[in-house]
Structures are given as C-alpha cells and as structure tokens.
Length: 310
Ligand SMILES: [Zn+2]
Image (cartoon, rainbow, N blue to C red; front, top):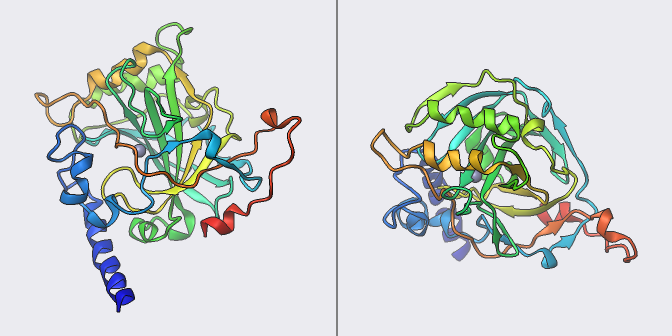
C-alpha cells in the first residue's frame, strides 16, 4: 500500500514538475518570497526537496577515485558557428548550441548539447558559482546542458530518466595577471550582453566563437562526477553532473559586465545578480584518477561507477 501511494505520488508530482519546468512559475533568486528556500513551496515539493539535489559542496578528500571515468569524446566543440543565439531568460543568460554532442566520460551513451548558461554573484568580488569545492565559491559557473540522444529531443521523457540529462560544469575565476577584455572570446561573448539587457530578449550570435575557445585552460580529462538535479525549478532529479577541476580564467572587467548589464525584467527592473541556488545535502562524489598526483601511491580499487549510477 505504501508502495502504491508512493508510486501515485511520484506520478502526480512528476507531472506537476514538468508543468513547473516552464518559466511561467514566478520563481526567483533575489526575494525570500520566491527565492530558493521557497521553491519547494511555490513550485515543486516533490523535487526541490528531494534526495539528490544540486548544487553541492564537493569535498575533494571525500571523492572516490574511479578509473571508469575516462576521457570524453567532444563533437564540434571546435565549431565556431555552434553558438547560435544568446538570450536573457530573466533568470540567466543562455546560449543556444547546434550540432554539439558529448559521449564517453563514464556516460551511458551519447548526449546532444542543448545550450549553455551562466551563474554569477555580484561582480568578480562577490562570487556566485553554484557548486563549491571544499567550501570555496568561485565568481561564476558555466553549465553546458545536454540530453541523452535516445530521448530524441523529448525533454519530458528525459526528465523522467535519472540520467536523461548530463550537465558539464566549469568554474570561472578572475585572472589577476591578464590584461582587460581577456580572453578575447569571453570579451566578445560579453559584448552581446548590452543587446539582451531585458528579460525575453535574444540576439543572434554572428561572432566566431567555439566552445573550445571558451573552455581555454581546462584539462577536460580531470573532473568530478555525481548524480544530481536541475538547479532551477522544478529541480528534476535527472542530471548526471560533471564538474571540471580546472577553472576558466577571465579578466575581472569581463566578469563584472554580467552583474552590471542584464536585468531580471524590463528596463526599470533589478540587475541580474546572485543567480545561484544554495548548497544542497552531500552526494557521493567520484573523481577521475589524476595521474599527476598518483605517482608513488598505490593504484585505486576498481569501482564500477556505471553500475553504481544505474
Ligand atoms: Zn545552471
């Protein structure tokens, strides 16, 4: 009986969650009445206080090394026409991606990229990444969102699959040694912000920027892995998270543009600041085996992360 009730609750709340996945629900970051602490009440109690919520604090010493976390295959990350459109959603700045995919990396199949978006604080001095590492919050975080190819673009189906989405997270921090407007690709991307200052506005990206350009300096073979959720309502627990260990270094003036240019609504609305969800309870975190740190230490035990995640 308990099982039946649980199943019915899952079905009902699952449908509610899908409804809530639209931007029609008035959730926000900035006001206690609609901010992250209120999401379970106003949006989705089923998921926003579930058992595998994101983001989390990654405790590096507690991460289990796993040799099945192999290198990724990145498709068209070098393509400088893959970034097609940049939008102000009222909650984030989102960039649509075309013909970009990822596989390998311990994922259970191929995943097609949908978009990337950014989270930030209030200027470079007030950090706003979603994940933290050993308690440290970085100035910004970039999320590349991908969907398992077997769902053929059906988001409703993907959100019902515990591994329906795969998100790639990258920390962005200040490059103290750089000149202003560096690196050039990030500076170019930020020039579009003044064209999308208001909620609901989009601009076509005509500049030649690739994902490889934006991910400059990141060793893509070094990452953490855990099973989590969307970090925005309805917080669906359908996301395989990959958080890369290396950071993207960007000049302070470029980071500052995000929290000083785009707004959460119309021209008289608040600037978009502190766009991150609070840290959620710990999850089991796995790590790639870092050959650079492994010299002289015994090999890690084999851990079948694929079966653990199934
Ligand atoms: Zn995100």
